[in-house]
Image 1 (cartoon, rainbow over the protein chains, first blue to last red):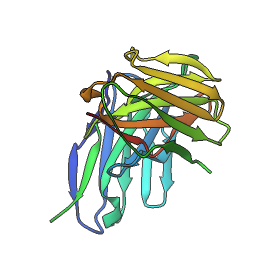
Image 2: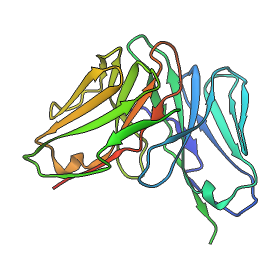
Image 3: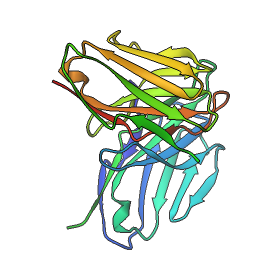
Image 4: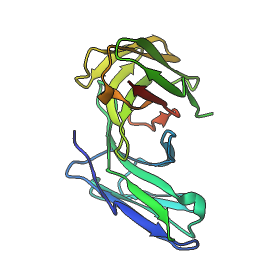
Amino acid sequence: GQQLNQSPQSMFIQEGEDVSMNCTSSSIFNTWLWYKQDPGEGPVLLIALYKAGELTSNGRLTAQFGITRKDSFLNISASIPSDVGIYFCAGQLYKAAGNKLTFGGGTRVLVKP
Amino acid sequence: DTEVTQTPKHLVMGMTNKKSLKCEQHMGHRAMYWYKQKAKKPPELMFVYSYEKLSINESVPSRFSPECPNSSLLNLHLHALQPEDSALYLCASSQARGSYEQYFGPGTRLTVT
């Protein structure tokens, strides 16, 4: 099925660094969601964005809903070891039949050896 | 409380077995979802229930049979599965009308032998 373009696919972080990832789409969405998934667990919702141009923070996380409604980015400031995991973006376009999320391929965040 | 619970956590079944996965939420959400997730991939939507009625079936094989007995419960009945059906099965829920956050459960790790 359709998948959003999420980049980078993977990144190494060093404690204290700021990191950034983004998602782009050829279609518009009216909601962008960012999730973090640890191995063997379900995705945990980090941030939800509802308006074009909206900038929202949750602790060290900041995300923005692009003006064109076709992109979003997530920043993590002052990264810590527990930030390791897979981050997924997801776009949502409400339809009467039900909400379908379109996911990005994920950004795998790893610790620098 | 944004908790979605799933049982069992792990399931191993043979290709001739019949088993069921269970999901429960008490957030008053009227939309519930089943997703399948393979390793290193994003979740793939299987079914959507809205107000206890099946609203979306993403062309899932009939060996997967969903059921929504009431607004809090969602089941996935499994029969005659194939080894390639081994995956993490995730349940999610959300409000039904409009574009809202989806909350995921921890998943059931299914292995078909």
